[in-house]
Image 1 (tube, rainbow, N blue to C red):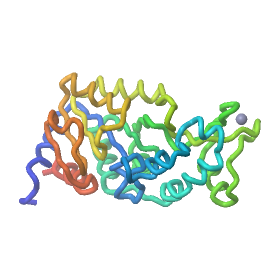
Image 2: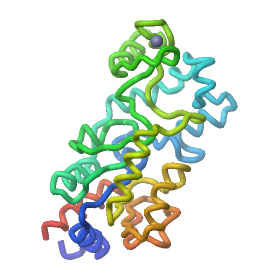
Image 3: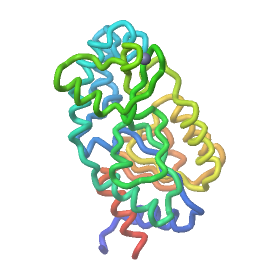
Amino acid sequence: MKDRDPRIQQAANLLTESRAAVAFTGAGLSTPSGIPDFRSPGTGLWARLESDGTDESTIQAFGRDPQTFYQRMKPLFQKIITAEPNAAHYALAELEAKGKIQALVTQNADMLHQRAGSKNVIEIHGSLTEATCIQCYRIAPFRPLLDQYLTDGIVPRCKECGGTMKPNVILTGEQLPVRAMLAAQQAIRQTDLLLVAGTSLAGGPSSALVDSAYLRGLKLVIVNQTPTLLDQVADVIIHADVATILPAINEALRS
Ligand SMILES: [Zn+2]
């Protein structure tokens, strides 16, 4: 491909020179799969939940009124269970299989990375794989509970104590999962190259992970539609669709 953007080859070269990179992904990775960026200011589902004054996305609101939370999240849940991984997810899985990426830190809870074949996925904003009882902390797979909810509209209850089952995604007011954050910190501490894709890095504590990498002088490749907070200091910055650019970078490794 002779017209290829030289930055794609640059990114591929950095991956080749790296010991093994860490990828850091956000909502932009899944928008090509039809999952709305529910944290984008003003547009996403999350923003709508937070701006109508009812605050269903907070953990306190969930405890008070899980029915409303489930109702409001229903369109997103439905999108997530019907969504398929896109070319960006598959490119990252392939980079891991080739040994170019050793870990994938994601802000997404939609499981599309795992479904695309990524193995070492660190979910720092939680996951929809499981749900936890908010009374006795029993853990159960979320999918059967969700399927039942989508059928009968009744909020999932704990089999043991009757408490409300909450999907293991992090709501406003909850701490990020400690074990995942530690794993992410460790992975980023051990790498020499960070590949940031599909996030503008505006998201609080999880973005601080990336800041710490920059402060340590890691190489930084950023692929995102819109400008990010670290564009100024990145080694390669490409503002374009991740589903086009990540496969192109993967392809460029072979040439
Ligand atoms: Zn329980």
